[in-house]
Structure formats: C-alpha cells, structure tokens
Length: 432
Image 1 (cartoon, one colour):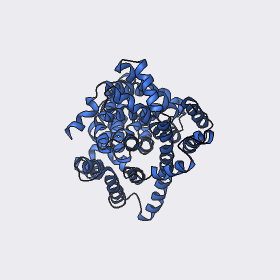
Image 2: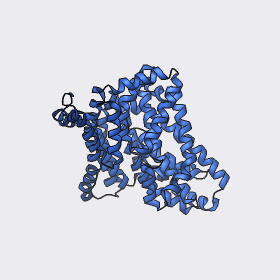
Image 3: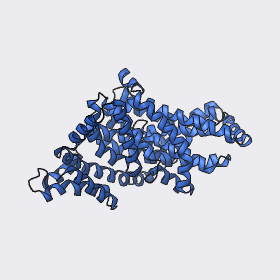
Image 4: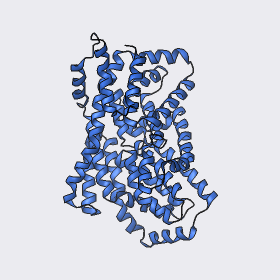
C-alpha cells in the first residue's frame, strides 16, 4: 500500500466526520488488512494504544486541565484583569490591552486556548461592551488573545510535542515565554491603533477606572496576589528544578483548590467532585486521541513517510528560508481544518527530520509549530476559539472572524519574527 493512498484514505475518513481517534485507529490497521505481510497487525495496534498512555509527562495534561477548570470557576481571571486594568486602564486602549495581558497570565494557568478564551471572555467582553467598545471588536480580541493560552507555558500542545519528538518539556515551556510576550505586544499595537482611529468613550472609561483606583493599590494587590502567584509557583518550580512539569501540574491543582475555595471563596468544597468529573470528561477524549495516534505514527514510520517527505523536500528546495516558509504555510492550512493536538501528532514526526536536516533546533520547531496551530484556533472553518466566543456573545462566527483579521495579521507578523529569529525562542533556554 503506497503512503499516498494511506494518507488519502485517512483524509477521507476525517472528512466523513468520524471522530479523529477512530480515524487514527482504523487507518493504522488498514495496511495490515490489505496486506497481511505488513508488520503492524491488529495486536500491535491495540498494544500501542495501551503503551501510548505509558508516559509520565502525559500525566500533566489531565492535571493542568483540572486546574484550569477550578480556576475558571474560582474568579482568577477577574482578579487578574482588575489588577492590570488598575495600572493601564486610563491609557489609550488600556482596557483592551489589559484583556491581552490577562490572557497571557491565564494561559500560564490553563495551558489551553479555548479555556483561556472562555474564562477571560465571559468576564471581560461584557465589561468592554459596557464601556462602549464595539462588541465584535471585544469578541475578536479575546478570541485571538485566547490563542496565547497554548503558547505561554504550561502548554498542553507543548507536552504533546515533547512526547512526540522526544525533547524536554521544561525547555519548551521556557522557550514559549518570549514568543508569547512578543505576540501579545503585536496585538496591543493594533489595539492601540484601533482605539486611536475609532475613539473611546473616555467618560465611561474614566468612571470605571476611578472605581478601581478608589480601592487603593494595597487592596487591589491583596485581591490579585493569589492569582498572580499561581503561574509563579507552577513555572518557578519547573524552572528552579524543584519539580518536573507533571509534578508542577499536581501542585497547580492543589493550589487552585486552596485559592478558589479558601481565598476567593467562589467555589464550595462540595462542588469540587463535580469539577473534577468535568475535568475528566474534558481530558479523556484528548488522551484517547493521543493513544490512538501512537499507532498511526508507527505506521507512518514503517511506511517510511517521514523519510520520503524529507527526501522530496530537500531535493526540491535548497533554500532554508523557502523550506521554513512552506512548513509555515502547510501548518497554517492544517490549523484551519484540524485541531491542534491531532495536527501535532500527525505532522511533528514528518516535519521533524526535515528541519533537523537544515539545522533547525527541535525546540525552535516546537514553538513555530504551536504558534502556527494557535492561529488555526481563530481561523474558520475549525476556529475553536471563534465558536467559544460566539457562544458567549451570540455574535456570528464570521463577524468575529472578520474583526479578528487585523489581530491575526499581528499574530502572523510575530510568527515570521519567531521563525527567522531563533533567539526569540532559544534565548531563555540558553540562560536556564
């Protein structure tokens, strides 16, 4: 069976709306069914499903998801937003910029783009609308900034990438900090331009800002400090060598419970079991997809797909710049039609040998890949963040997508810088 036919069959199965996990599983056993001499049989396929979960780093995924669920209901996003708005709320585009910074910090808690968009958007979009910002503009800024949730560590896609290609999860987490900040700054520049061009309701803004200032800095710090401390504890324990990413994820769960139940008191203890069950429901499909994708990737290897693609790319294109542009273009298109995790599981093993052949650091590749796929979270037809924000605001998906175009262009500009200036991703890794 040729690998072209293999890939085409997989695409047909996915387009038939079969769940992606079953698409992985069915396609993995198909070569053996058509050719009994093929090495990867049914027994090995199901064994790979079980062994695919036998990974210590993967334990971090359900733990970070549960921590995000708890903090989403614990008032963390509101405390973060109020703190940042306290300092920049009286500046031009101060409140939209505070939304972006809040998404940056909340991404350091949840590790998920849609979770960041939902938690921050549910609180900030009504507030921005109340201050007479256009509702579609408010929705678009949260939808795109929510994508920072998978770039700022801890990031679930980084964990998947690290286990797929065998690089350090901690190094990926460190490498994601500066790219995430750069993307946030690029988005803030457009938000400032938009507000300068379209104006702001200064009376409403001043009124809301004065209410924040009346509370005083110490009061605001007291309210926000536990929320601000959360990413410091999680990431500090990883970067300080005190805990592995998985152990830090466990710390994150316990810290989120303490803060949400005993500090902010937005969650009752009796609700914790229900939140844990919700976290399990959210992470179980992800883990099943990962386990089924292990067999799929092994079939790709047995069929020499990565080696064939690598040989074709290197023999067709001699310029490193052209190869990187093609990889970015392919990943952007993939992100428009496929969720982030399956895209990493499918394409990382294929792209990895190509970029290593041209001298690209695998950590750098991981950042570039996740940034590309984060853009896919806000581009139709897949655009998970668009659907999340549309459900919150009742604004049509296409209306949000149209208003999001300038923010996406800012994202793309940052992507080009990240792609062709490796030091943006690797500087902190070298210092760690």
